[in-house]
Structures are given as C-alpha cells and as structure tokens.
Length: 258
Ligand SMILES: Nc1ncnc2c1ncn2[C@@H]1O[C@H](COP(=O)(O)OP(=O)(O)OP(=O)(O)O)[C@@H](O)[C@H]1O
Ligand SMILES: [Mg+2]
Image 1 (cartoon, rainbow, N blue to C red):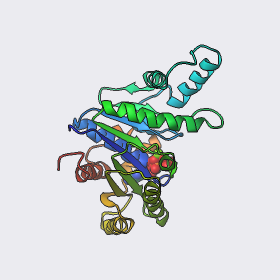
Image 2: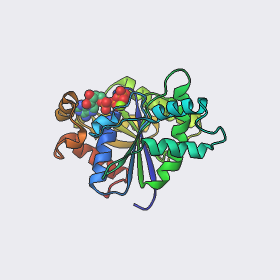
Image 3: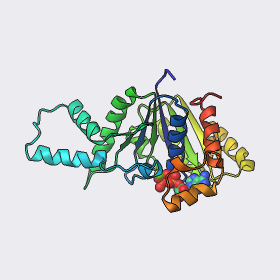
Image 4: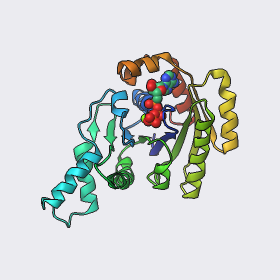
C-alpha cells in the first residue's frame, strides 16, 4: 500500500472497539499490508492485553515524569515541543516484529488527560507518517472528536452493538465530527455482535445516519472465552467467525485486496 492511512475505531462504551481494533491489527500484520502502528487512546487501556503485549509505560506516565523533571530543573525550559514529543515516543513506543504499539494512558491529577490528548494529536500527526497504516482504538464517547484528536483520521469506523443506544452514539459521532469540521475520507458503520440475518438493520441505520455500511461481526463465543481467560486475540483461531467477519470488513473498506 503506497498511501498512508489512519484508521480510527470509535463507538459507545463496550460495543467491541478494542476487539475489532486488535483483530484489525492482527489481520493486517499477517497479510503483510505494510508497516502498522497500533494506538491505544483509551485512558483505561486494554489493547496491549488483547494484542498479547506487555507495556511498561504509557505516554501519560512519561508526561508525568517529564513534568517532574522540568519542575526539578532537569530539563531546560527552552526544550521544544518536538523534542519533548520525540522523548515521549522513544520512551514509550513498543516495537514488535509485526507492528508497533503506542499506549496513551492518562496522567495523574486534574488536567493531565487534556495534556495527553494534546500530545496524542501531535504524536499521531508526526508518528503516523512513518507507517503505512495507523489503527487507533478510541476512547468511548465523543471527546476525541470535540478535542480534535482525530484531526488526521482518514477512515472512521463507528462500531455499534444491537442497541438503540449504540446507534444513537454512532449518529452523534457523525454529527459532532461535522460540527467540529472533521473531514474523514470515509466513515463506516460496523455492527458488532449482530446475527448475520440482522445485517439489514445496520445497512438501514448507516443509510439514515448518512455513513457507509462497513459490515457486521457476529457474536463469537471464542472471543468472550478468550477475554475471560485473559488470552490475546492474536491467538484466536483464524477460522473463528469474528476473524472472518473483520477480514471481510477490511476488504470492504479497501485495506485488504478484495
Ligand atoms: N463479536 C464478539 N463476540 C463475542 N464477544 C465480543 C465480541 N465483540 C466484543 N466482545 C466482548 O465484549 C466485551 C467488550 O468488548 P471490547 O472491550 O472490545 O469493547 P470496547 O468497545 O473496546 O469497550 P470500552 O468502551 O470499554 O473500551 C469484551 O468482553 C469482548 O470480549
Ligand atoms: Mg476498549
């Protein structure tokens, strides 16, 4: 793939964003679709666990350390934002043979998450240029939109479960993105834990909301078994229904050859 793509996975809490992100990272890396950066943008991070990777430090942690270092006069106050950014990334970026992983985490105390958010935007901006595909597991809700951390997103995947609340959040995400003038190249609605025969509901809602239909992922017993047993998604059998469904979605949105 020559063009660089930033893919973000958003939606209501608990709809399956992290599961779909982890499967996407796994499938794209197995298919050798180019270099991949996975970003966990959740303050309560769990993408590393799903990807079977242990991460010692988050951007939030090093931001805290850095602030303390500045207070103690260990870092000159003249240091540029770009230098700070590089410092964060070098300390935190986890490299693996198949993909790299960046975990945002959160800072301690008031206002720190805001700082992490700001850094996230800058980091994605800078770092994603080095990868063919960046896949971001977004925080539940809408803050990533209103804070414009999604400034550089090309493809927005909105995940919903079979609930009116899930669809409502999906609509809200589309509306808020428009309000804050975020322009994604494509926005897709994905139904997770949908029986295949209910696919039409997701198609219908996508049409009403004004986004494209991305596909449906069925309820997959292996996925929740793995979750309960703490086994990473990277070990999920490739013949399991969720794996095949996410593969189909990646073909539909043009990240895998059809
Ligand atoms: N297709 C599926 N089949 C079975 N279980 C699933 C499926 N998708 C997700 N789950 C399970 O649903 C739960 C929530 O999924 P996940 O953590 O991916 O959601 P999320 O949207 O990232 O949640 P949060 O908003 O808390 O970050 C997990 O226990 C996960 O294993
Ligand atoms: Mg999650």
